[in-house]
Length: 246
Length: 246
Image 1: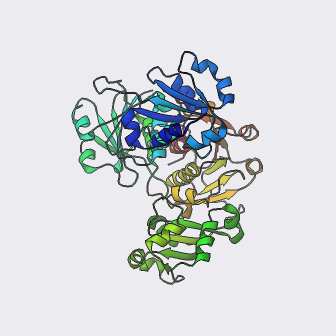
Image 2: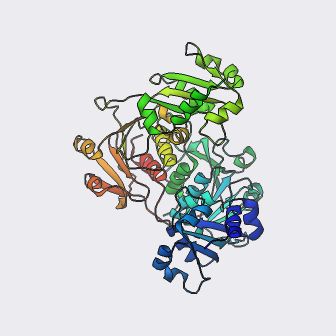
Image 3: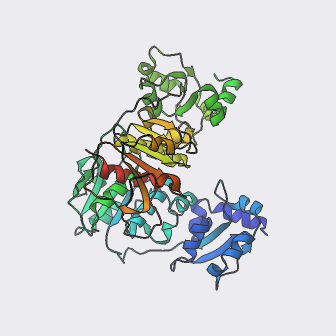
């Protein structure tokens, strides 16, 4: 059973202000919730789930805080999805430190706005083994429910941090920085590297000039047809596929 | 000025049934509308735009049906966007024929459901010069306003048709068909071709077995990290980039 104050509280977590105040976020759907429950560094605050889900997933909740059993109709009241899916969890936001670097490739996002693109970028990074994404402060919040959703559970594995990207890049003179740009050099197949930064920019404005000037090289994906640009997650996937050491 | 019946009519075009009945679709935003107005094979039915847009874009409308000037507030009433953008156009749906084949690479979509993915697939195809996309009948409608939006104008250039994919593939024994599959062979760099079909599948269920069995080869993108899958548009972009003859 849900009480009104719970409904109000969960709905409030659609806003960054309230997520930040309590240091928590919402994740929904059986697959994503299961991945988060199994992630060592993500702490469960509360699960709201249908009886059916709870029966099937008892093993996931062993030793954790008792879940709240709710009806499908109640789930509709708290869900951020158009088609609510059995379970909603509130989790503590993980905190990552710039002091520890996971190594390998770091993806840098300059003012990515669309939550769907942001989630797909996290999922793409996860596929290619990128363990850290560093975002400009104007980039969409990784804990926006739509980002969590489209990341398909990859937020359980990829560290996402926010900072001034100019300072971040300048602070790492030993690590090459590449920028994806429509006017760069053609992406080549023979330049695989184990450690670099890949900088990608806003969906309509690209990378801010003050940042793109910091990159050692600007690279582009050759175009055969007529689209003005590629989707930022598609472009990132192609570059990671091509440049990262296997 | 908008009358109530116009508002009702435009809203109805959010539904496939009504788009099909009249053979029309809606496109919004300055960039997309401009591209459609300049496409030879797409006929304008009606433009609804703010005075500001009309003044700036007179040249686009020369010789075309007189536009309807509306206020920003009126645009909000008919727009399918969360942030309406100056202009909305109703266009006649272009009709493409299976009898004429544009050649080159054909992208085959098996039951793609998400309008955002569908639009991004069209835009990605357009970037790589793919001129035809053939979809299973259960695939999202290319004229869904969200698909039109996320295709970013590429629907003005890429032909999208719907049919039984099994019959389509079987009817082209001379054209190799490749299927993107998580359990396929690793995508290689040395297999560029000028003419082939690339089959990609539903976001959660993949390609139906009856179709994937028709492919000469199943290919996969090597994974370094832990995400369960790649977004379908990201995967398609990587395969097109790697396999298509430059």
